[in-house]
Image (cartoon, rainbow, N blue to C red; front, top):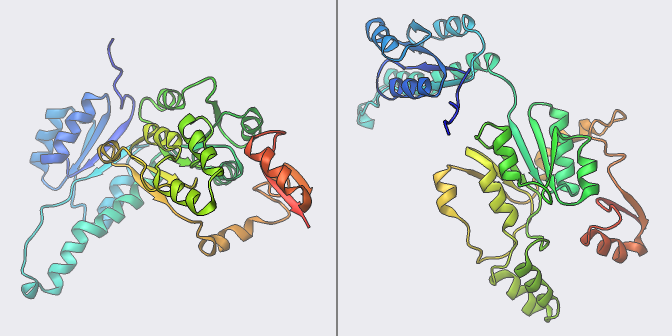
Length: 340
């Protein structure tokens, strides 16, 4: 079976594309069906490179010249990818380096990259694919925030019908894990790339993991001090959601862990994390950091639907029963507001 080229119909811009890594990347991009645009300082070498790879167009200019760089991007149509190959390093003893050399180094390695990003951004398609695992209260709100920002395609994943139905209002698509493998569905819908980012809003829930279920049940019969030691060191966290996130995200993508993992002995597939160059973000909610961004959204317009976010409003005395139903995913219970 012949594999379809992964960059078919896309445009790749290579600044520094007349030699070395830039030229080789141009060859690979062309082999995957892309149209390539080459830019470099040397016109003769650039012309030769264009002939070698069959470039769509070329531009000879100094990319550290912000005006020339802007003019270059202004003359382009839509583009999909940009690669800047850095200039060769210059080694100068620190005590011999003067201010002009520092400015030149910054211009070559930092300022130029910023100028390229500014010039390329308006020409590139918006968005990407965000997959959210778990449509509980955290995952559901993450869908609403992403929907409000409206800058990416959002896919919600769960196994509970009520949660999936609720997610359809804010997600571009939903995946029922009872029926489909989210890894395969996401790969098919992203031409084999995978999601740009995955939010794991499941964490160490035991549902779907028999070993973790048994261990957590056993821990419930132990005295609290012993139970804490067992859950911390036994390594029985449910890693199914994390492993799904690792398999679903694209190379160089980001996984955000908002679900809690409490054990200290779980085996994590570091080989895959390293090979795919995955970025991991995790930790407690930085509430103070985000308050200035969140408060303006809590208005009468209610763009995040916070007024209708709670599925149940109950008296405080009903908390034990409500928690049990929530844990067992019964009665469509997703978010509960308890009234004293």
